[in-house]
Length: 263
Image (cartoon, rainbow, N blue to C red):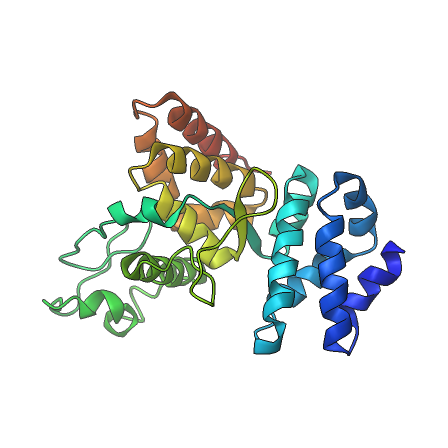
């Protein structure tokens, strides 16, 4: 029955899709079904449903996210999910972000810490950081795609943290993780990378350790390793090697080891 259930995720009738997504979410709670579901091609179908923005897909997206979180608990399937452009993120609780204080910049900089060539006066109102692209000299300081994505992700996540909505869903309710003890969510990689880098800059040691470990887990290919480096993960992780909390140091070392891999 797993093959037709997975096939129904592509059905034209949205009600059929909704039922199929709900059944799939329930089945993924049992690890014994994971292999058969993945072999039936469930991961790309779930990713497609999660990325569908139509309002009618709200409940389907919720079930697809739950299924992907459960499947990602298996390392090999997690790598497949990352390869589809999604990242597993620990839910650390919205209260952990209350300590977030964005670093003031007298001049805007890239997330990895590299400075931008100055071509005009910075805005005293902070608009220069927001309008970064308008002050770049295209011939001398054109950012590559990786830097642009890092800037977009950082802006998105810092905004959510500032307004207190970083772990809330589209209905304004605080997100809950999977139905297992380990609570996670799934985000597109641009936002996911920026979210993890933001968390390792917080004060909650438990949140930092979880995020650092998640960075290591997500560093499964060159694209992800480059993305974390451009987002400023390396500098923060190196500083955390001196942290007084042992789990934080161990998780940071694990992340740096994974980031340093080259094939």
